[in-house]
Length: 153
Figure 1 (cartoon, rainbow, N blue to C red):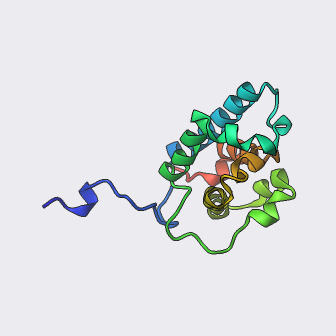
Figure 2: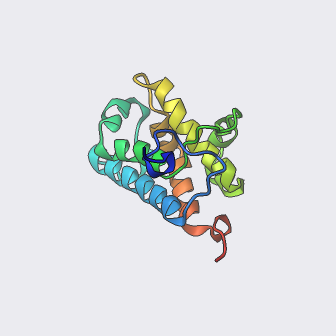
């Protein structure tokens, strides 16, 4: 019999599972790809020009599925995330708030965004809302730029 650690795991990682640099950078790439795909699809120059009533077409974009699956694969959706939802504090001023949170809270934000999406569909898309209000672009930018999130070798 094969040992469990030699098999593909079906459960999301723990909040205690460290992220690899490649996972964080890839999530940033997925966010940026989703933003570019949505802007191209809807014929706008910036994500702030997208509209919430476009959620059905937005959720059909291949880049949308890539982002959702990628959030799991990159370790930002966790099986044991804290029950405290940080989205309410961040939604009002996402650029400033994302700059102030630590890595565990940043993971928690993505976790709750992905989980909230399950409950809002098919009536709305929290992911689209987070794209429009700048939260997701702010997360991508912070993951790319902020060396304080990364361990020193």
